[in-house]
Image 1 (cartoon, rainbow, N blue to C red):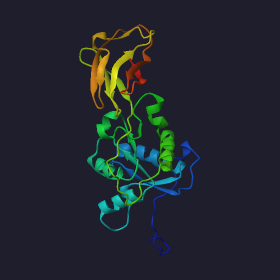
Image 2: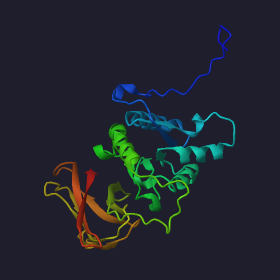
Image 3: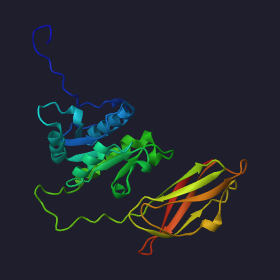
Image 4: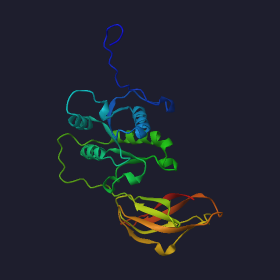
Length: 271
């Protein structure tokens, strides 16, 4: 109650939480729903998503933005149904997040946000994902907001499944070739871990090391890998000798899809 006797109600602001990063935000005309854990450590992620949504013309709300009386679960599911765009933060593998995400997939193509691919179960890795825990620009926290603007805009252009529409059969995920890699330190040395993070199996998987990276070697007996199926992970022993060549460089992971297409993926190595 204010000093003049008028009841004041504080409404959730639609202005960007961090407007200094961009001034090209639009007046929201679409509704978005944000699925994520209630964690202070992830509040900055929420701010980036809200700001990206406003730049794309979408006003994102989370479950704790719903103030109307009623059963909270019913309200969450209705908010998901009514949303034009869905973003789900999978960092930490929160069970509630995956429950709501599973419901959202029925009608939407959610955008996933995660620190790294370790936060993503195999059966959702084919969904559009923006990472923020990596060193390269395409997965760094500093570029997250800009990448989310593009992803949200693209999601708005997709045709939604009409309410009441029944699929004749379960949708088949698009075959996507993707390999993630990272160099890990072990008690006795190093190893390069490769994960098939796509939905297509890859054959004859090999790793090409640039000539200037003279200090980095892989045990050739483990390469090439005959078949690397979706979700499978291999660990290749590596040796590192300090003092020879650059300490940060890219290796190229190569493979062949079942259709015979040759694909390659850069993996950042930091010694």
